[in-house]
Image 1 (tube, rainbow, N blue to C red):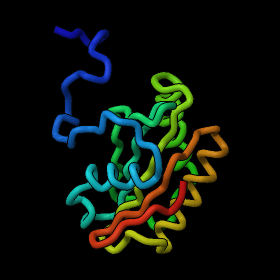
Image 2 (tube, rainbow, N blue to C red; image 1 turned 135 degrees about the horizontal axis):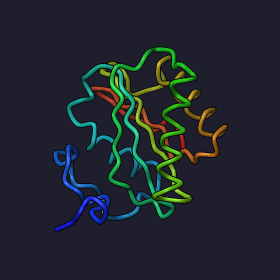
Image 3 (spheres, rainbow, N blue to C red; image 1 turned 180 degrees about the vertical axis):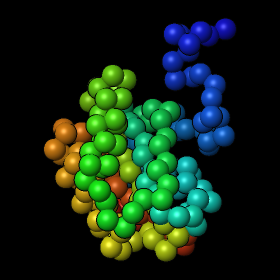
Length: 150
C-alpha cells in the first residue's frame, strides 16, 4: 500500500469523481478544448468559473484540476497573481517546462464576451510576468465553446 510519501499523484482523494484523464499528450489547443469540455461537463451551465489544468513539458496532464467558481466580471490583479504563482510553484516542482491551460466558463459564455476578454487578458499578462507558459485559454458556455488562443 502506498504511504503519503510514496503515493504521489495516484493517491485517492476528492478528485476521484473526475473523468479519466487522457494518457496521450495534448498536442494542440483543440485537444485542450476537448479535455476541458469533458472536465467541465454540466458545470457549463453554472456560475462564472475558471478551470485550470497543468501540463508537463510533453503536454501530458498532471492530475491537478482547479475549478474556481464565482469569479468576478473584472479580474482582481492580486487574486490572479496568487493563482498564477501557485500554479507556477506546482509546475516548477512537479513538471518543469510545463504549462497551464485555462477555461473561462459561464452559462452565457463560450465566445469572446467581456468576461472572457477580461480574464484572458489578465491571465496572459500575469503568466507572462511570472514566466509561466500559458498553453491555451478556452471559453466554454452552456451552448458553445471556442479556443480564445494559445
